[in-house]
Image (cartoon, rainbow, N blue to C red; front, side, top):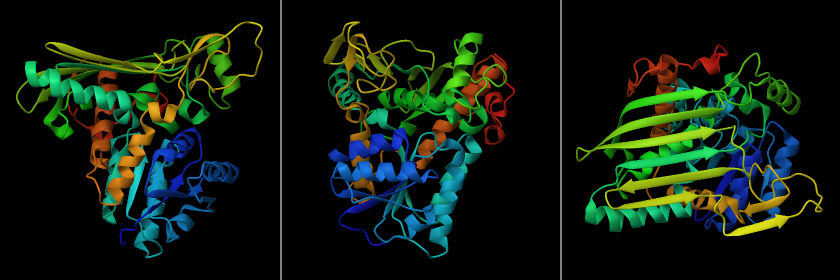
Length: 413
């Protein structure tokens, strides 16, 4: 396909994640959201309407992936659908192109690239089979504070006293929005698969010198731990079943807490450490993202709930529950942090801008599907470590066939 002056983008998926991207698009140049497909046609129409109301269209809902890929106004696809549909969605895109029914420049795919290593490799293989550009969507490394903090620490601290040696990252909230996230077989696991894909990549990114590839900081050993701290307790399992149809954590639980310690070796011979934790059992104002980077004479820290804007509501203020102050909001009274533009604060705007420029040939990709495969390998090694109760060398043997017990429905905390 000839590179257009403006990129026409279609979205697969119409849920919470897609809506963050659509809102982020107000800060993206040289591209328009042209379409949305979802198995829920009503939600697809709502997402397209949102894009048009924000002035980032013109967008419309499509009846199928094939129809969207066949439209000459669509040049790239952002895949934001459920994990269990990942391979099927990419297969339909690729088959449409292979049959000569459509053309694309590239595909950008949300995390994780697959529920396991085999699926992630298949997504990458399919995409490469029709010679498409590919970008792995990982918003947190594009968060403005992360980008700027990393840049300054490496330019001033590391340049004077040596490279950083310890990175920490965490993502914590009270639990996902949709039932499929809670189902190990559909999602591919629990919170480790859902959110450690962010945190494990963030620590590696922070430890990597700006301008260099992630491969210059190689994972060598991984120690993983998983637990169900809250949602398998009887009262909370019952609460979860009522809120999420078809979810039974007493029968088929998934982990709601995970930690991982990754030992990396740098290209210049240093051992550096990444520590990451993720949780669906966090109690606080809402979603909390945090990161730290430490070196010989410097450090940085980031916490999204340290917001510059705070509101206070007394008990006399009544209103319906919602998420208008912060994602995964847990309260409507007391003092609450407000994240004014979450999509920008979490990095969606910067990441979307970057991959638009990548597909238009104006930048080289920071993250590709190869990086997405590597992330899934780290996650599966962490699961294998947790199951064996010991530190494993990376990559652990047999990863191509490995499926966590949580994903098989056989894990018992």
